[in-house]
Length: 418
Image 1: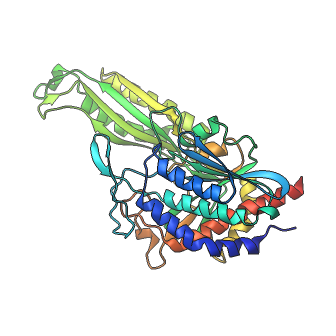
Image 2 (image 1 turned 135 degrees about the horizontal axis):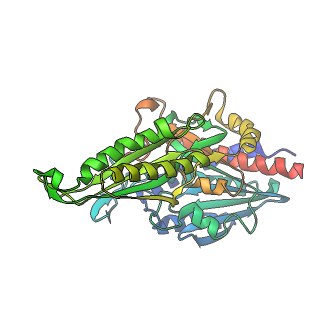
Image 3 (image 1 turned 180 degrees about the vertical axis):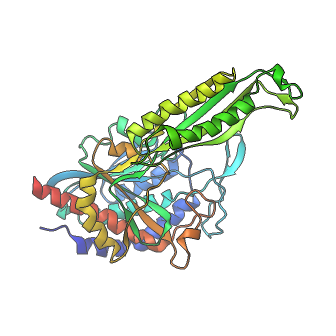
């Protein structure tokens, strides 16, 4: 028996208005990483109302729902992240966030500038759709509403990694997992899918250069850490261009901050730089860590100014890599949902996602959903994380249909294969 696709689509159509309303509510009431108290309560109440078994307080404020189908079969997980960003919204929407908080010692706005409100609303809608066909499902669906995807550095664990540590992929054991991300660079309703690497790993980089303070009028009397730091910044660009083989996979190292000195005519004792390393391949990632460290240390050593390099691999994000076989097997489902011409091969993104940690444990597929309105050019649309980022509500039903159908089809096909 095939998965109940026609019923799924009818139920998705019926719940569309609710999904839009849920997203507007969540958008107007965003919460930062590890503060998703009201969001979690909102989700849990909805799942309980559907008769879904609910576990709360996972990895902080995570919510996990378990829906057992009417027939035996495997376990598939569907994931949505819940946290917002410290961004002051400038969309002018009637449901725009007005929330302001103290963040990093200053007052900032809080906004769902990455679209996690859409992810939550889509998965809430998916839960309602699949609950409506539970007797026809050949297995179990685990709904994972995840906190803190945007990070909680310098904590050693947060978000997906902490949920895994607390057993979210066990009891029952998950066989495969699917997740989506709304994306401004594609038109509303378009689905982006690609096998293999999708998003980059992300590692925090800090370089501390220690010099010797002196008057700027007599730089030879000290050791100038600012000059050394500028040489290090330029030297780090040779890691990609000269030191690591990147033919098979792109990579980048960027310095985002540089801090040193208090006065224009005094050369300081110390400069601290921070940045990020982005790669797609574990071997390239390891090579980058080695070569970035060596390059910075040796450039500084040549000037007599020691450099201390910290790379936070343990607090970074792994590369998001789609399971090749699972992606190929489920491609027809995404093609059916998207419609003719609306399933595209997604571009590599140097952004990062902690969905990657789920994929390190079980086969997983992460896809993109275009949310830029048809009357706007995606190339000019405000990007995710922008204070002007918007989501076209018309795209949400495509997300619900995709998540619902891929879950039902995965269960049916793998139940038959056992």
